[in-house]
Image (cartoon, rainbow, N blue to C red; front, side, top):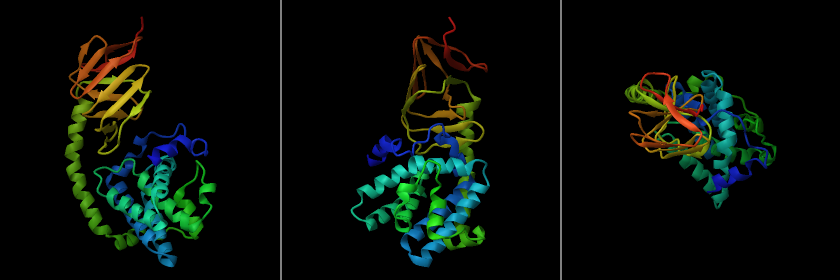
Length: 307
């Protein structure tokens, strides 16, 4: 609840980010290398939360190295992650510390969130957890950081500056302190299993007949279980509701959101006047819009009525 209430005042605090990448902009966090180095960063942050003095600094230095290693491998990763940590991580941090009866209780909650994050099937939208950890560590290192944080801030850099630390020189060597070898083996096995899942989604949401719904509008959905399809977009499986000038969409069995914001719904497509349906989804077309054949045989698309 407090997470969402923070969003209501985020603009007043100068921490709103308008025009930043969509939440699907962090697909790299669900790649093999992205997942490995994110999990290592989480583990180092967890260690930092349980330590003090020089031991805490060493753990933060490790976390910074894992963060740098991950971001160096993907174009725009640093900026996309930074934006989500400000947009969502600060909200989750606020909800965590505001509901905790003490600092130690807030730390315990952060540790629980870090441990739980590693169990998620996918790592999209995981700036929530990272933001909590950095925020609580900053509470100890820099009492006035909340007054200084800005929409263009990087929480990791703020923490390094507050503790006067730099990333450890050898991230690979440091990973051994956090079970890096075993973690990599587990992630490689997961990657093999996920390839079959992605192939099925590719067939269903990309290669087969689809309905293309325009971008724009607002609504509700959840990223839990979301699965990226490289080069196409991300499939969201939770209850998905959207409303725009083009009409309304409700889906319960998956929606592909492409990089340009359009929604792809799998066929076969059934059209009855303004109502369009398929397996697990329903679209109602608004007046002034119509359904026409799409760019490929068997596809349909919603466009403005040219009449």
